[in-house]
Image (tube, rainbow, N blue to C red; front, side, top):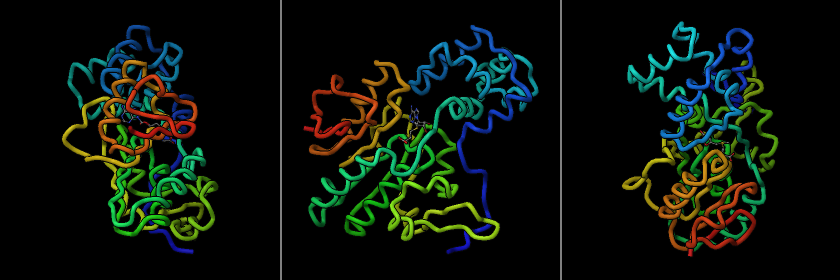
Length: 292
Ligand SMILES: C[S@@+](CC[C@H](N)C(=O)[O-])C[C@H]1O[C@@H](n2cnc3c(N)ncnc32)[C@H](O)[C@@H]1O
């Protein structure tokens, strides 16, 4: 047991806080206001919100109206868009993106990673991986545990990225509620996870040596990432394509494939399919593709 440093910010489901706010203050959002915000989100991130998400938008942005002490979304929009308020635009993206994630989500992917990729990796060759919509870091740290166990110490690199600033901060910090650790294999738990005691009871901290191995950076998948990031042998692009329309999805998959080395692997979620999108990918297992 290790005493986790006494420096905690709220950890947990990013969206859960809004249910409390809602009870206090949610003002009605008009159709034209909804459309303006929806268009902005689409232009910025590629995320498409259907009209059924109108209430969700009003609920999640309610705290921002309260913050600025304005009473309609039109007033809020004037402030943000006409005032060219970049910080607040980022806040809109942060609040309207969905961040649900957990450790070792879709465990078959981690079995494939370990058995088919890591254990066959040529000794001495640098292995580079990218968790391309990493949310608060659970996916990237799950990958890091596998790499740390099955690849030579100094021969792997891992990047985690997201469009949302707030989840990136959580990922870098590496604190998680203990309830979120239930899918982590026991041997990894004892090696890479520190359990908080006393005031930190109920909190887990990813071990510093593992945390240092993952670089979390802001990357918008809807924009070009030419000129940075480098090339990868494995890219996880899971549970994010569902938020885009077909056009954005195609653009993003093409850009991602450009970043994969020949023979490299792309993982999407079991609920997503990219079969028709790129002829440079060949399916090798359910929701796993290899660049040919
Ligand atoms: C549901 S989470 C998926 C997390 C993780 N990949 C998993 O499967 O558990 C989706 C993440 O995609 C991010 N995201 C949405 N649009 C994005 C974009 N255009 N560029 C980068 N990240 C984006 C969100 O901020 C969110 O954290």
